[in-house]
Image 1 (tube, each protein chain N blue to C red):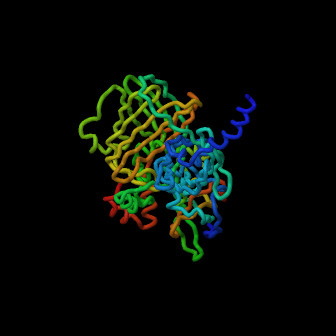
Image 2 (image 1 turned 45 degrees about the vertical axis):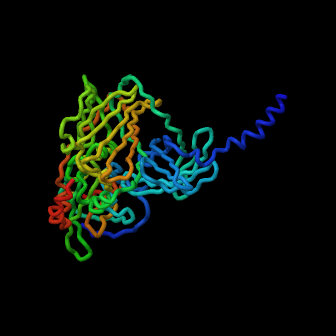
Image 3 (image 1 turned 90 degrees about the vertical axis):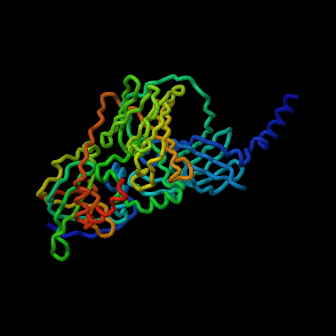
Length: 338
Length: 120
């Protein structure tokens, strides 16, 4: 009898275990062996939705092209930008087995490492269980998704942005919470009663996250703050931070607008490997059809390592404009100044 | 001094020691990654500060006229980690350098730091 049951299982299990294509639908945590920027693993969000007879695939809130879907196999592309802001297109091909999608990434036929996606479990309400996030954390790994679906207003704003003249960092002006958080610089996290203080190496920007239960100040929407006004709370051992009052700026040097009405939710936690993970979710319906996401992973640096000062002088920016005869163009673009 | 040597174009910048931290800025908007060049001349000004260090250099063109070129490299934090100091290139130095050329014919060069030859 046991032999009969075993034989039946062998015959039947492979048939019923083959996942249907709709089993890809859901929210996944995407892990890439090569973060494409500094060459370490990075994570982000992978959302697969039903779209008519097919599926729609999103990475960090931006759509990518589904190239093939066959039983438990999936293949899609992934546009991303590297540190010098050049755009690349990788192909991710994988197989869904036992609730995990796993495969290899390639670019122009060359292997770019392994990738996998695991389902994001539903979040249950948890009592506060703070952990120590303080210390010096190195440059972040990110997936660096390149394109997101802009609204008509977002397209118009992006079309007028000239990175050689409008980029605020060229004038030593803070480029804001989002870009400060994914730029190639370290951060130092300190804590004192009721607040967490984040010291950015980039432009030696400072940020305070209030944990004392306060609400946003009245009129915060018009504050036009580079780093926003941030309040946080602990959900289990995850620090959840809400930020408002951001100034109008761009997602990165290449553009992608952020309006002054944008709000950002972050989830700070320590991964099993001890790295600092921060999930960003930006809501900016003025410019984007969907929330835009980003997930940074930073490794802990030794306590005796120092974060360096980054003072800044815009002299060379104006000198370049003068050499290229573009100073009048610059003064004429006051309306688009970020 | 020596004249600007227009050079080759080849894809990619994998062999160039340009500062990746410059990716914080839209380097690709200002420089053509497929257009590399070498220039030779005398440094007339050093801008040693963030966001990026710049060297201004007088170069003789093919017509014998002097042109002022803007040589750009990384930020002070990145440079300090590679041993590149304020003394590496000084005003009055006669140097030859290579890198990505500016777009639209601008007289700019994104410095490949491995290419530096100080001829002083």
